Image (cartoon, rainbow, N blue to C red; front, side, top):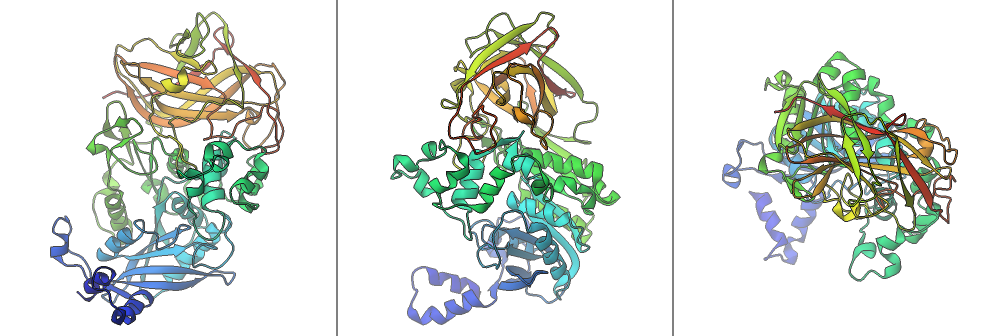
Length: 612
């Protein structure tokens, strides 16, 4: 119980005579004892006495030293190891300590390491660029330590999840499993951009304000009540040109942010660090978890499908799993305007523990007998296990745009129908980058504060620069689960623009909640790795990849598709000029035309599965 008394020094009764004890507390191994009375409500009260060894140097292949904390059972012996590599500080309060303590109490070694150039670790911080080699070297260093039994897994979400994919793509021989949560698998296509459109709120808030150099910085000077007008996010994110936008906050050039702007297509800069280019080199299974409204949902889904199709071994392909809940950037019971019930929450620690017990300890806990996919179906608000993703037997059905009058806003006449319209029609609107449609709900997190999740879209559907197409009231449930795609026949009067699409569930009272969204920067119509500007006023068929979803549109509800050309500040405003990303100091208004019916049948493709 000595550690318990030591912790009390932080409260009442702290005196100078305790300084030596505090020094020992911080700069030597820490001993924590676990007793049943301290965990009366814990369903698993049997634990190991543990210790924490701080600031352990881990050498990389180039001589750079990265530092890690090690959480381990006190009892001598060799143990399986779970490692997390983080840019957020290995002592980040409320993130790593509890999880690693609980793993160590259950017979694992837990290791948390500062990545290169962050906090205590040496080197230069350059997001993403060194994580593959450093992750590989860390895993192989662990395998050589006397506390390791040679069974190693990786753990963590978001950037920490990316770090797992990066390391695994190097085929480290000592790695046995990964558990990437809310993680990107293609840093260009499902982190920095979506459909080639630059994720401004995330990239600026995360890359410029919070993470420009060695330590994570607060956003207070852009968000607090005392913030002057010129520093408020709503003003600073409007700055043009984007290429020097970092000066408005950091006050200096942020190299990685400027690199992201310079490499605006999926070129070798991005391909060299894309996990999706190297699934065949990942030799271990991956348990992918995420949320239907998370910013990295595409990475979660692609991680599963990529491994199932291209994983480097039969065991890796067979052992890969997927779990997606009605969440944002982590589990909960509700998000946005909607509550999904207590059963919507999943304790991911328990999921991880079962996964590691199976792969690292060889415990026969039935993991291999479960279906590999577990999805939460919104609308029905229940979980369902599936044999795969996309779900076997899925029927892809076209829902067509039509209407007998203009579709502008909720007041318009835009309609959706499963019957292909014979007669041709058009809808038009003006997109003014100086008056963009603002972000309200959808898939976002973690950068400058934006409103995310299922939010009632009527607040933006009242605008004339939003086209609204709505089905008749449903008489029976329509269960949609899988990838969603928009086929849009459209023209603009300039060389480039954006097409923003939302799939919306309209409730009987008229409230309208997005369940999927997608955007395409028109210059990438032929692929994210090539830039082809448009011929003004020429009609093209654009294919717009949208977020996957699982939603039951109930009887009395309606299905809706919203179309516009901006979603700011989640995405930067396309200035409609065709100039390189970040170059424009001025913008132009675009005249947009959407074609539907006849020979140009614009439609959304819905993945329909068997209902409940």
